Length: 293
Image (cartoon, rainbow, N blue to C red; front, side, top):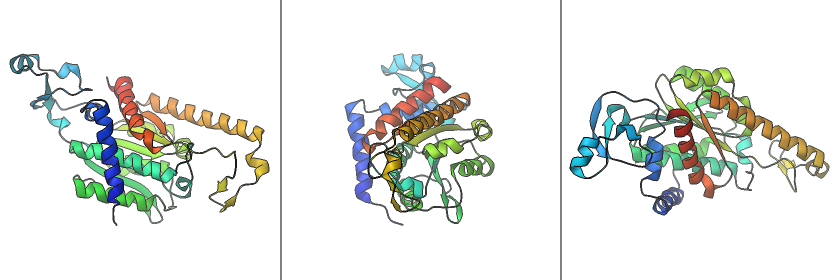
């Protein structure tokens, strides 16, 4: 497997541009803020970053040095971050903004994985393939990061045998460690997730969903990925069908949002690459404010 280094450079450039536009620490601070719980074992001090818990400020040390210092604990040093990325024919369609779903999904993974790699955490990838669940195991570093992106790009095109619900079941039953889980899926994936499964995952893990927003099934020149032909105009241009589709999508999204909130999970939607960083920052901030802080 090989990685497209132009693509990798684009991810790094976008993050660098975003950070310089806001503050140099905002992404790092927001990322570190998602972790629920910590060890009680004090390790050392570091300078405050936006998103840190003010309760961790060591005021005595801060007054001596003239800098705002945070008490750091052993559990903050390393975390296990699992990426579950949906795949198959449905991910080869377009998003609501007309971009390729699989490219938006891959860019979302790349953006978050880059932040995780900078933080020094262990990451793993779990996807559905024709031979079953493909689990990369946890590791860290640039080589692992690049291989994980290449692996995801290859698997995104694979139809596979399971859906995202089966991948979540695999994570709950087979991976016995505390994790931060990022689920990158679509409307179909959100509809398949059960409350029982979310309850099991919520016991030891922080779970965040990114919905890659599907294009509507109504409109001009729509291509049916399953049947490999363009859909009939009399159906795709039906106003009645359009209203029904919008109502159904709203119902699925609201049900998923409500169910995730009950178990301390957060969700956002993205439909174009240029919005990924903003959506990720908003997701991390919301998860911290609503379910941790």
